[in-house]
Structure formats: C-alpha cells, structure tokens
Image (cartoon, rainbow, N blue to C red; front, side, top):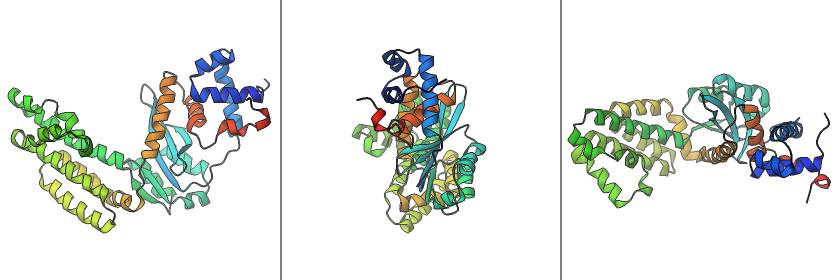
Length: 316
C-alpha cells in the first residue's frame, strides 16, 4: 500500500494532537479504523532511525493503560520535559530493555541524575546501568508512602474505636492527607483536637507535619541531622506503620537526601502523565499499548513529529 500524501499526514498528525481520532477521522472523511492504521504507519516512519540524544536527567515511572492490571514503563527526559521511551510491563525486564537497547555505554555514562519511586526494580536498574548517576527518590512518592503510613494508623484506631469514639474520627482521612499550606484554620483545629480524642493518630499526624520541614533544607548536613532526629522520634512512637516507613527511609537514605543538592523530582513526569491520562480518556482507553504509544509519542514525545514533514509539503 502506498503512503498517504505528506500534506495529508501533516493535517492528520496535527488533528490527532488536539482531538480524538474519531473526531479527526470525521474531519478528514475517513473511517476511524483507516485513520488509526495510517496514523500508526506515519508515526513509525517518522520515528524510524530516531536515536535518543543528550540524555542527562531521567525519570522513570509506570502508567496503567487498560483495566486488568496492564501497565507500561515510561522513561522521561526531565530537562526537556518529554517521553523518550515506552515499553510494556513494569518489571526489571522492561527497564533493562531501555538501558540495553536504547542507550549505548557512552550514553549511560553521561546520565548524571536519575529519579524514580521507591521500587527496588527501578533502583536496581539505575544502579546497575548508570555508574555516574546520582539516584534521587521522588519526593511525591516519599510523601505518598508517609501519608499511607499515617492512614494505616487511622485505620487501626478506627477498627478498635467504639461507636462514640468514631464520631470524633469521622472525616479525618482527607484532613490527615492535607499539606499544611492547603489547610484552613478550622482544619488545623480539628486535627489538634485529636490530642484529646486519639493520641496515636495525633502522634502520627505530628510526625508527618514535622517531616515537611525536610524538603526546605538547603544544606545536606542539616537535612541529615534533621532526618536523624525525626527517625528517632518515629521509632519511639510505637506506631508500627510509621516504624515500617522509617525502615524504608533508612534503607534508601542516601537517595532521599540527594534531593537537597539536586532539587530533582518526578514533578515534570507527573505533569506529562496528566497529559497522557487526558489522551487515554479522550479515546476512552486503549486495549493495546502500540496504539497508546503512538499517541504518547505524538503528544509528549521527544520528537515533534509534524515538524519532521518538510515545510513545502505542509498545509496552511
């Protein structure tokens, strides 16, 4: 089959960047299945021979692309705010393929900072393949793990509480999650009232509040000193979920403290993921990763695909 005209390709790519394939197909007067096939072949052709270049700061995360626990691993260039690689699955095998197939030894040696969650899969891969990279555990995932530990304390106390005590705990879940900068004075008063109603939840919340200071430190030595004191307090709290979080924190302390010098997080990756979710929702989900990957590369990939078409062939 012959390739579609380049003028048509340019229009097709631009339309699919801003609207669903169904809407683009209606504008181009094509069956949706035909457009999907032409789109895939065009993106594959325009990316053929493409090599990742200038990669120095990477982020790694996974996304769900279909119900039934279907996941994909995404690698981001955090300096250029784009996706450079996509693969099926979220295990060690998936991320190893990126380092083995997409990068040369020289490129791996040039990576200076790598950011990921607390998954040993990603940590192990970064340590094995990037000898010169500083590993940074993502701030968002650390805060999430701490919030989950606090919530686990709340659940334990809820299960043990009497009917009367539960009235005081009702509605506390989301208040406990909130950052101090987003709480109202009334919210803070409600949380402080836990000191009378449930000391264990109050103790867990106070530990979470104190941990927020860690992210504001500018000097590594000061952050390490704070962390040492905070860890001691958490261990003395006799709250098992908090102690479990502390054990995880101590196991990866160097990668946690690395944030102070680098100030690197996966915030850019999370922003890209929001766009990726919009793309997925626009199509009401994807059954196959291949079609989803096409749209990710088209919208937030490391190559501006429509710009690869020579200007003389583009439509006005």
